[in-house]
Image 1 (tube, rainbow, N blue to C red):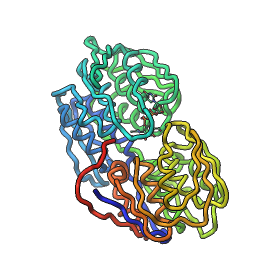
Image 2 (image 1 turned 135 degrees about the horizontal axis):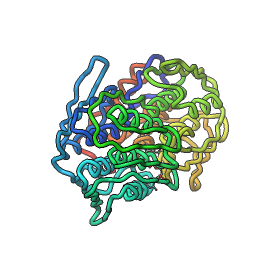
Image 3 (image 1 turned 90 degrees about the vertical axis):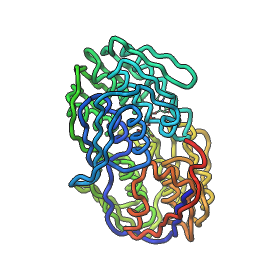
Image 4 (image 1 turned 60 degrees about the vertical axis):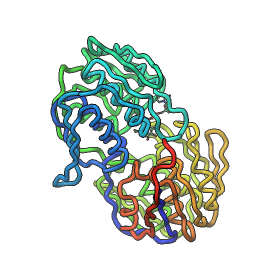
Length: 431
Ligand code: UD1
């Protein structure tokens, strides 16, 4: 298995172009099941997760073509016909978001059999809200032997869906399924993440009638059929925030382009509170930090526009070197502090109790071998390694490859001393 080795201490200087959002791209790919015409996605990230979903879609009958367009990578997905409405365990377990093919399969063919998902090891992560939303739309759902069997022989029918709490995946699932349902669907307590808006924009370009995406109430007027479209994947706000934090950790000056500051405002505010200089620009931002120590910060993760849970681990890495005690509260996922013991191997002082971590800043971190446990946790270890004295090696790099496109290349172009050590053998454990 590959490892990433980082020699800490190099300041970063340069520019990083942000890729299209992984979390959006995989839902947009699933949307291609809703039409028999080609869906062309531009600004596509090339990642292990998009490859996983491509493999699943091929199994269902989609032609997936990766091309290089004039302004970067594109994927063209054409599902002339659904040849199988079965998403098997071996493909769905590799990535939780594959579960979102259930709604489109059901909407287009009236039936589907989809394995219950795997996904990152960050808490229980059930799919009950997804299933409730589909049931509200008239689907009949049965669970046997790890599979969801869903049927809607007379098609899906618009309904009122009120989520008890905010779920990104369930909101997206409801949008995908309701686009082809008969009549109007109203989603209450919908997630407001930029990826929801991106999915709604793409579906609308395909002929759907969706209003209110990005607010807690989304209205969908079902249509009989959807057509092909070309859609640019929105910028990856988690990649944006991650490199902003990497620049702050290592020090120096890094410009992030091809992205938007409003997507990461809650992060930028906290970074400024800590003493990092942020210059907001039309196409991104410049992050500057000189050698002074940062101030500690208190933060709580929340649904968008709150502080993103997917940036919590990276922010904790930054706070390990602050001058005082930071308090980080995780409210979205249980068990999402698995990076804490690994950061402690580098010399960080972190005490976790329930959903709260207290991080007592130290003067320096020291390189060590560490192990990634999930996607965002693993990149927090890379960030810590950028400032640790000596060499840090991060193993189980396949977590990083799921969500960060050309990570070593992007960081080393800014002067980071980071390299990949190719290893033997496959993935050690599943997610
Ligand atoms: C998505 C993102 C993930 C991010 C998360 C929260 C993708 C591929 N992943 O995950 O990176 O961390 O949003 O911003 O887009 N829940 C239930 N029942 C359900 C669904 C969710 O109890 O049916 C719970 C989850 O366990 C979690 C919370 O709701 O505690 C929020 O999860 P959700 O917003 O659904 O996250 P994902 O869509 O899985």
